[in-house]
Image (cartoon, rainbow, N blue to C red; front, side):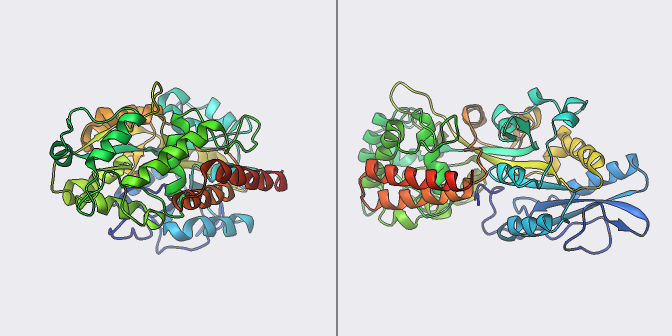
Length: 425
């Protein structure tokens, strides 16, 4: 399960269930009826960076005005419960008409026959046009030559956050952050001043953040998790080099990287303990209040002679394969895909390019860096067994942090991935 969540969930109040009907239902049947009115149900995970209830209410009001006799019901669930609740409901033949899906769930739901391809509806739509969306966000809906969703939002792992004050103290020019891996290693060494501060804070705990963060190293070096045929390619020379780079940076990181999750590393940075970290643009909301120093962002360093490539995450809108109102469900997705509406129901970067660029320019420091990072991004592997593959990758990261030989670790992990792929083909 991906922890590329809608941002800044930590420490914020949970969003309550939102409904235009009385109360908040639990397992609403797809296309169910209430008091003679047809009901279109949409499920979303809770977002806490901002209250999206009003945004949804505006969309619902407009949609119901344009579709007399129909009622839209919006329900939200805690992130930790959301995926399992959807799977149980949809495999039981109920669930929502429209749902948000983490992009790495989309192939899984498609392969299981739980959602329907939307190519025909998109082809006939005057609202949803592929070229209007960020390229990587659109590609995250592609599986087996079909389009299974419409992007709602996305972001990329990651930018490099750095402490300009520590750069100056170490004799480094804060206006010239490292751009290559060799420069990165040199800067980390010069910034390393234990136990007071460390050159680099690195995510390493066993969750999705360690997979997606190290994916950016892999992608930047020309590596991949799966090859074009869908087979494991995790032990490629490019991946070995990427993880050797990661392992080398551990020399300049605080002890305990194997247990350091995203927020732990953010705390290291805001406390002035880590001079550099890798994280997404959503963490700017935290930095603005918690970092009491001159903090800046830059594109993460890339291998010498290569360009940075980020790993994408985000959420897509999909239609239940068993929806009795699939045409209206798609029309609701069209309504949610209008620029103002997409911005209103989001706390991540809207996937529509016009809305996303406005969001970044209006809400983020150094927006040009973020837009460059977004343009570089590519999705994680489109595989129905992605959650299992990521678990194997996370275990490999743990072993590498523990000092294991990178080449043999990736070979073992790649063999395990291939076993999972073969057993599910």
